[in-house]
Image 1 (cartoon, rainbow, N blue to C red):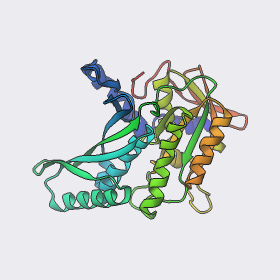
Image 2 (cartoon, rainbow, N blue to C red):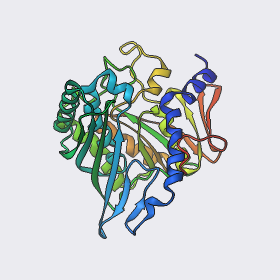
Image 3 (cartoon, rainbow, N blue to C red):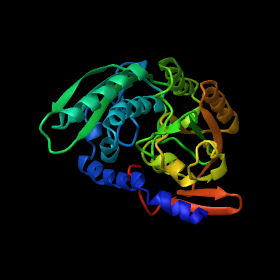
Length: 329
């Protein structure tokens, strides 16, 4: 696949395109996230940031599981509902405290599998599921989970702070497998201990406390470069990325294309920006000490375009001066 074809495939990936609907809802909600005097950051972040005292902020997030994933494997959907929420809190430099769920299905076996997946996720990630709501008579199957966490007020990693000249760090735990029932999921957690996973999540806490990152997000359904695109959109900047520097499994051991890899939800995976190569190297060391492969893959610029490079070849994935991903800036 040439670079232009790859860029077009990533730009038109459903995991990216479905984010565009966010703009209309946020426009309707207006300044709803600013009601009261507690909100530090709302729409556009992996978790909302709320003021509670002089030393700490509360983090609040919610994620709904993609229907095609739930239909493919309800257990995996339940497990991932925990995983994605815990990652949202970690991406902000925070520590998760507790979760609640909204489960919607009239099929008892699906409800049981969703519950079993959530239970296994709770045990793996060490975050309690303390309540929720069940719709037992819906005509559809759905799972949504909300989470609350905490972060020191001077340690928050926002997604909107990237600046021209910043270096881009991509970090992914490559010790995993393509999930058997869903080929856009990289499973790097089910076969790890809770201790190992906690150590990996704490990497973002350390990076936040050391103030190493100017911006960050956990890699989610839009894939590695789609998630970077969302960060660029929030920050009002562009970037160039060297494709070969993005962490990727050995293709002899895991025979998947670069297009599939870049569209995958990678489990434990983050994209960060840092002011300089020295801070980038420190972040890489923190990640690698926890078993996460990390690399500086490119640089932020003022172009509002995300451009990928492979040797002398270049292609643009997004022109954020003319198009949107979420429309939140």
